[in-house]
View 1 (cartoon, each protein chain N blue to C red):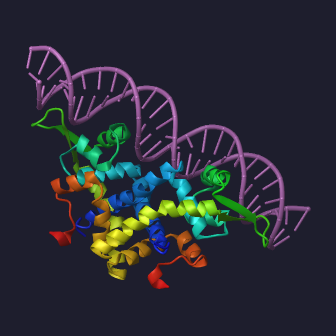
View 2: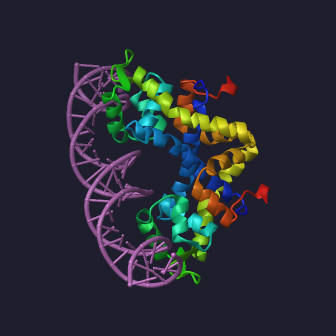
View 3: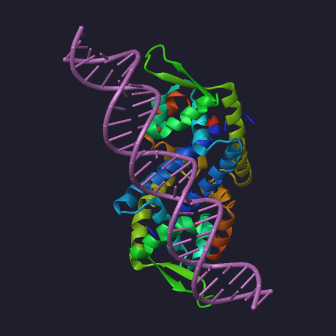
Length: 153
Length: 153
DNA sequence: CAATATAGGTCAAGTTAGTTGACCTATATC
DNA sequence: GATATAGGTCAACTAACTTGACCTATATTG
């Protein structure tokens, strides 16, 4: 295998950066961090998920989730209910306030993908490049060092 | 806009996690971190890049790059040369040792994408789902809470 | 030529998003 | 009754940053 594909590794990196930055700016305005958004998002997607399931899903330890979960409860963005089948288990739900916030936070990310799909279609390379091209540094330096996908040569 | 697209946000998150984890495990075996890999990778892709260009490209401050760059020099994975046009500027290059290491570190990531493209084609949703499906937690919880792309309904 | 800007380096302190380890309670299962 | 599991909490540590301050060397500009 030649290193022709390395360009896709670059695309993945910069595409993700655009994706994550899009939300970060809005999240910050609401006094939250990326992790708060992530937790709130997944709890709203999976109403009634247990703490353990959530941690397994996100692949983090309970200690790593502690502050974030506490803050979301404090701010009344999520709430917990004791499971009737197993009283040890706590089921997590987003509150109305939480649902509303998560909608706002997701809006820009959804909008960006919709725009990109409308513009370049659904080809993986085209989509990722459309994301990556929104990084100023990427665009200028890419040209200078002729970083590109093999098919474009 | 409905929240149908939120599934793509989930895909992006888990796909990236698979992508980044694939390299992390190998990087760790070589006594390096993700940032060392990233710096070495981009310097090898853009031989002669200046420190400033690299920092602009990666969107980090020079303070944030200091230790990593020092370590890469210490380990003789990169080297620097004073620019002849502008003596303030340092041009960065990967050494032979650096080039060899970065090839090893990239191999699995390239292989995974090649496999995925061979298996599912180049559709963005299919590719991202193939990445995401490699997360055990994602696969099991996804089924339970019926997370899916609208087209699959 | 002197003033200022730029490239690069380095120290200190703070933040986010985690980690491992230890230890606690409540409930469930063997 | 012993053990396992769900959840909580404290402490100490790490990676990958950040901002701010201050330094040198070289280049550009008035």
